[in-house]
Amino acid sequence: MSAREMPTWLAELQAQLGAVLREPLDRSSGTLRAATERYPDDAVREVVDASNADARARLAVYNRQYWFRLFGVLQTVFPLTARLLGHWDFNDHAAQFLRAEAPRTWSLDDVPRGFERFLERSLAAHPAREALLEAAHIDALWRAVFLAPDCAPLRPRAEDAARLPELRLALAPSVAVLVERWPLLELKGRLGELRGESALALPARLATPRWYALVREDAGIRRLPLEPREGELLTLLQQHTVGEALAQLEARVPPDERVSLPASTQRWLARSVTAGFWADADPPEGAARQRAERLTGRRS
Amino acid sequence: MPETPSESATALPRDALGLGLRPPYYPYLFEHWPEVGYFEILSENFLGPAAPPRERLARVSARYPVVLHGVGLNLLGHAPLDEAYLDALCRLADRVGASFVSDHLCWTRAQGVSHHDLLPVPYVPELIELAAERAHHVQRRLGRPFGLENLSSYVSLARSTMSEWEFYTAVIREAGCWSMLDLNNIYVSSQNHGFDPDEYLRAIDFARVLQVHLAGHTREPDGTLVDTHDHPVAEAVWALYARAWKLGGPFPTLLEWDERIPPMPVVLAELEKARAVRA
Image: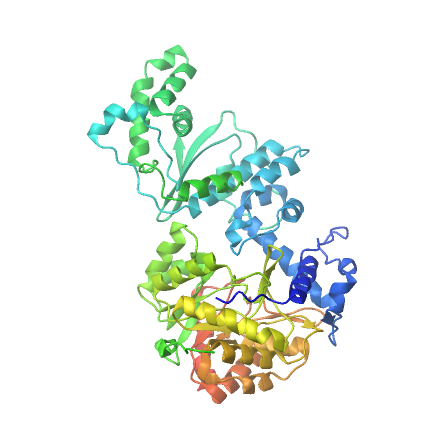
């Protein structure tokens, strides 16, 4: 293709108009209002007044569209977090995030990248911070599982058994293991019935944490309850070799539990393999990196 | 500009009626497989590695013709075209056997920021050749007809020295590409900027129209029309469609509905109105 470039004046114009689009909406009136008075005069002069609306009012259409489209994306990806905060407060956090991390790619799927980590800071003073971050983590995991590429599951052969302790298993990208301290997964499943934008009451903290695997299937994402030690084991298996994970789990359990632990771990491992939790060797090229980026918000 | 693509642009029957494929349709679609001439997908929704969209698209493309419509090309951005994006677009078009691909005559990104909106440039001769060169490059990369869609817009830029339709038709002619003519956009822009939509239509070379888009819009309190795709097609747009059909039909016709999407049978009934309007 020819290396001919667009004229410089076009770059300047697009920079001016882009800044207008990204001008934060004003919240002081209790609604989100385009702050047209803050648009730079240079940008406004580039636009012709219409018979029914001046240049600032017309630019405001794009300004509002920019923000509401992105708020919509974040509300869609973080529906549980949005309802626990209420959309008004959620949009405030979203606006702060988008000012710090404006979208850089053509893909709307990339817009939420890093939002979960951002909330760790922006919710610092919130009284329900811990629960809200758990909600954001659940939303992020749910999204990552949904967006994951297909990956052949690990189907170990009999001869693999001997070297199993030295293997480090990779969780399939379409599976996630999580622990909740509030009954948030259940609430997430009911959001469809709880339409609205106001903040939902945070349910009472659970007496004991609950573990789940999120497993993508043809019909959608399934919540598979795990026994607490099973959840711990699956988490350890993602961080260590099988042998190390089993040893660490054994070290954690009280003596009276140790007797039954070998049988339990065998059962949990067998179930995880049968259910397709593990990827065959490494996930396909790029999948592991993309998964890590989605979960951490960092680009490698 | 050289090399007009093959006439596979007419791979769809010229009177075909199609629908913009959206996720809320899947349950009804996969149960009933209704009669639809073709589906148009939003390219960007299927370019990533996520398996569910790919699987659903495979089911759809096994039964219906599928064409691609993008919003991320940034044809008139100051930055060069994103060749990695084009690579992915080519792979997707090959995968579904798309008879054509389209995007918009607009810019979407500036200074590295993607605005996820379709933004106009000043309509000036200086940009015609540059836009045409890029559109031609895209069409050559795709190896299939590439259509450019006219925008709905809310601002007239002071630097413009020609009408939108003069600019739009000149780019298509120079590029040797095709027109993806959105009649709702013509109507919305005509009301926002005070021009005659029929004058726009008279400038169109209908032999180069890949397809026509129809959609609904919203009127703001100050009278500005916004291209929201959240309503049935307005009567004034149906009337414009009837005149376009008389002027240049037949052409494939596609209905877009993106927000507040009703049940699929309602959307299909809206699409069917096209037959009556053009009868």
